[in-house]
Length: 460
Image 1 (cartoon, rainbow, N blue to C red):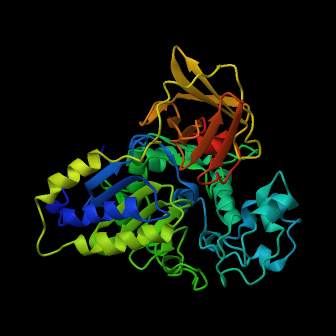
Image 2 (image 1 turned 135 degrees about the vertical axis):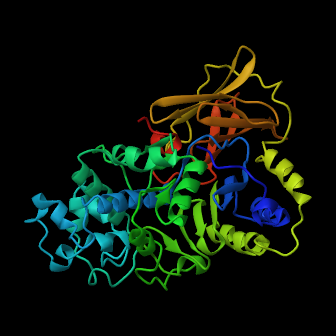
Image 3 (image 1 turned 180 degrees about the horizontal axis):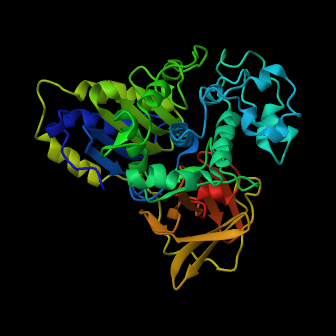
């Protein structure tokens, strides 16, 4: 099932406000949108993708993955498999003799959900150092600084442990557990999860799915856990998950210090899940609205500021500009990120056997090669021993598999190529001197997990 399509004005939203929001996303420094979907009353009021990104493609969600992990815990609670007041340790009895700190032994499932394990800072690196093969054990061996439940700290092993608990009680993977209970009922066909070296889904990050799927998760919570008449999450779970469980006044950005629920942030308006570089699932219960956004944005507060400044005032206004519906529809159908501009690539002479293996040390990238294939310029990048390839054209994006590329020649005669890994937020800038056999490489935003599974959807 897809969301019924409507127009903003038919749903009580001024399309001029949506246009202003799109303008803000495109013009605000530090903000780069890849996709947007706006729902009201369970209908799609507006949706669009910035080429070369496509609505039907998966996108790495980074920490927005946490909200999907939390849904798995909520379903397990409903099924009686998980008890919010049980200790985390009780699900791993083999660690009972190892974990001796009394505070650590008192960490409950609800504390993990609320990022309130008692640690004052993220413990992921220390946990992995303590036990490189068992992150849960490493985490539980780290004595909390304060009593569990008393202090907020955004702590990746909290969510990793929640995912491990779901795997433990279900006897399978996190995705296997979610498939018949959440993904299939909501109509989410494509969701994959990056796994660590032990084969376990990260839980706290690494989920790849579509913007439509993000919207569906938000709509499920907006509908208090019910989807097409079927209850998937208990109403009291939704109420608890989307209200403040622990205060976080020390967070630097205003929309990040409104409190934290169960793997959801509270905000000045409604609540949300979010992930690095601008992945958002914003739910506004008072307006019956869900806003999903993907992108490569360094200034995530600016994205929310734009929503509050332009979208909120457009809801239920007295005078809706219905004529702007058509203008908005045309605008959303023509969205695109700027390709590389410059001189033509036609005159670039390059030997396909020339390999430029500079750029080592860049996360995920070990080499690049520019050559001609049947007269067409083609870029091949080497990613941790594997190769991905894409044709390069003047002044436009070309897409092949998980890559999109655009190129041009600058005034110095250097070939400039931008490469987008379109199943992730990430953009790679390349400057290639084919004659010298050299390449300079720079990430616009650096991948947060090394390896090809960050840059493309992992295999099922």
